[in-house]
Image (cartoon, rainbow, N blue to C red; front, side, top):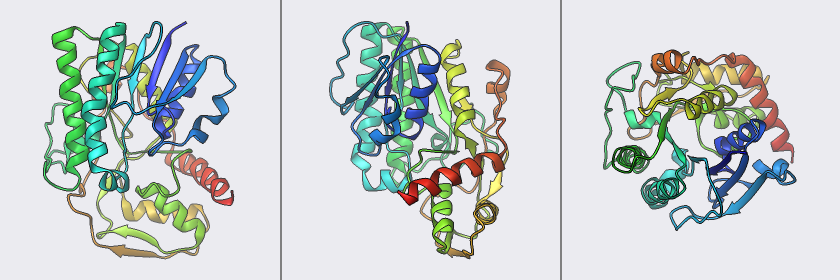
Length: 312
């Protein structure tokens, strides 16, 4: 039985990854310090004898007894509201946390998968963004703490691959949504849904014409699992290629929730990307993967999750 470690395992993506790995027959250890994660995301797994949850900060030494086959490093604040509030912790988990997780992979001769991000491309000057694009990042801007932490994490991962021979994989995750996102997450879809369900004004930043490509969580997890089992050491974009403006996305959410909310506009945050769309040629060609869940279907499932969560 394969043993997988998921750092950030009580987070939005980490918890879904735990579900998938267990479904594939693995034994799973989830590690999370619960700064942005929530143990309720894995509460349904606590009775499974193949699952173990460990509360631990991965910037400190990580000890795991026995053999380990896979380490999936998903620990990090991932929402602007979080990494602007926790800038030093974000930098530490991207640097020290990645170093500790890679050290464990080296010691256990385990395959290591890094959760990187489309934010490595910054406010891109190339559209859509292929993995060969080096990005347009402001290292001293407010968002730099997240962007540069992930860029450093990628460099560290490749150094361990080249110098120590560690088997590594890097996934660059584009905007993802679905159940288990936090109501106060701060990213567009949770904000739009929670505001619409409350009948509050729905906040769109800038003129709303900036674009994103949003991927349903089930599609993303499928892509990550295929990458884990592949032999691809170079970064791979995983995301939905269907692009939409923030204004149109807000309108879709309002319609889907049958809300009376109106859209209001606020100033665009510093260094907010104007466009964001993955070139998924590599994922389609090498992993035979592409996003399949229609946005209307994914948004409906996410709205129902938020509706229930807000009633509790």
